[in-house]
Length: 246
Length: 337
Image 1: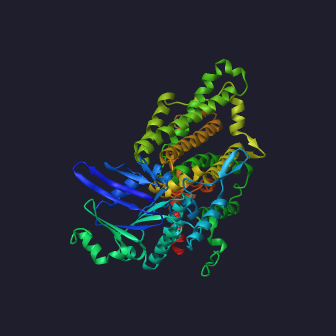
Image 2: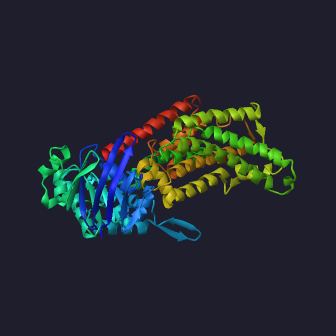
Image 3: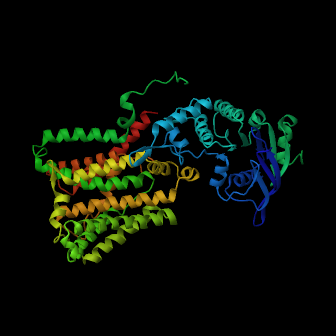
């Protein structure tokens, strides 16, 4: 049974039709690359799935039930998490603090409920070990490399037990050496049975880690195929319009 | 557990509090106090130390609240005016409630008057917070406007004069606000108590962490579900109420509240916070910093007085210390890179 099913999703803003007839599905544990040029509608689609706003047309099914999210918190409780392009981390807090932001662990001391720093640090260390990442839970995010920051952002979605993680350009602003680290992190999510929707404009990364690629152009899906049945040249053509559909 | 083989433990003097601006300022404070006790025989006298501790307590209490606002990346310029209006309302309540039957219950008039004054501080904070967090106005502009509005109210209510504190419970009030306990001035105990409370709230509660998160990356905080508007309004209420406590205690020391109480004080309060390590860009700061910063300012002012320096130079010195403190912090962080 598919984890996420989109049927004829459409979104219009006045005169602009941002999305039309977008339909595809994602299976659990599948890594799907979402590619397309600027203005193709990728961000709009992600926002709809993440619950930022509902679609103008079409339906969505997640984990077997019809869903229509009114706010991001609804999508999060259903098990959909987003890792934003700028990672949405507070530089002045530690990795553990960022992971637990909004979901802190407490301990009861008499009549007061205080933060349980030790428990949060322990759980953070566990999450990093699962992700096989060399990130220290107590270190300030400000001092971390791009790959480590990405690990913190991903660990936060692991904490929420997300079933679908949407990642917006995760390899865009980091060094070449760290890209391998991030792609490995994504691979580890697949091992855990989590589905990933990867928005990326970097062809080598998509072809390395994704199982399937969905290409959008001007608000429509122009291709939805197994990565093994496509090629970087074909995808480039689909993005620019040189290849009409595939 | 993976081992970071290329990382040694950080040396003790480059880690934690000792490597922060607060640590440097605390060191400067200790050295300065030592220097002054050698240079001036009057510094270590009971009378002088008592004055220093008392004055620094008022500044410190107000700076505690101001620091919390600064950690979120905001600023509260209305604290001086809030101190005055809260004290004035407290004094007026002493008069008003003292004339009712409540005067017969010992402590009732005082408790209600003080609570009323603190309520005024909280209300000022609520108004600030509403315009800043809900409407979305800039903190500087909003609190600057409130500074004038509230100060104007102070003059209007008192017709430019002061309000005496007398009548029912006034002696009790003076003992609790201007007395001596174990040889130390009472305000110092309020300062330490509030400082500990604030430290606990900031570092050991979720809400305290949200304050830092908002200062570090407000957008990220909002995305992760932190109640940003609520917390932002809350910090201005805290600032207003700390100012109220400081103002009420100051009124207790003076015995009466003039309309120009704490006029211009907001700059010293913010200076104390910034010198103590609170970063105006947000995300950094703490109660220890507020206390250490206030202590340094007060010790310097005391030093200038004992050295018979013209009082007009005090502001220049405080200003120079602000710049020096942030310069040292900049050099330190650059050296560590």
